[in-house]
Length: 115
Image (cartoon, rainbow, N blue to C red; front, side, top):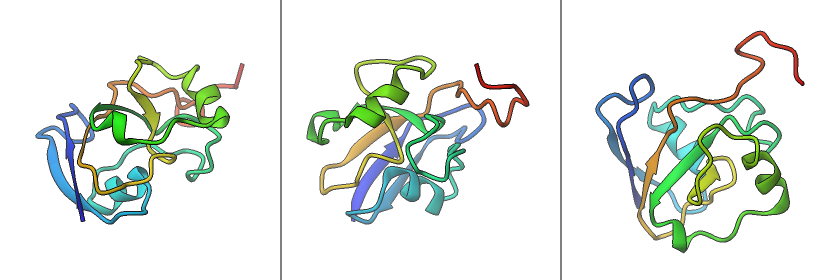
C-alpha cells in the first residue's frame, strides 16, 4: 500500500487526509474509495479534465502525461507544472502529496453549453 496525503480543500476534504492506496489503481479510484469525492465527470475516460490535481510531492516519480492528458490539462483551472489528471495517475510505491484545486471546470455541473 502507498501513502497518499491530501492537502485540505474547503469543500471536498476540509481537514486534509492521509490514505493508503493500492498500487496499480488510479489516483482517482484511490481518492473515491476513501470518500474523497473528487470530480470525475467523464467516468475516468480522460475526456473532461475535472479530476485535475496538483501533485505537490512525488511528482517526479510519475510517468510523463500522455498527449490526451496534456490536451485536457491545457484547459484546467489553475494549471501548474505539477498538474495531473487523477484518472491518469497510476499509484506506485512512491508516496504522493496531492492538492485538489479550488475550482474545476465542469460544464455539465454548471449547466452550461460547451464552447
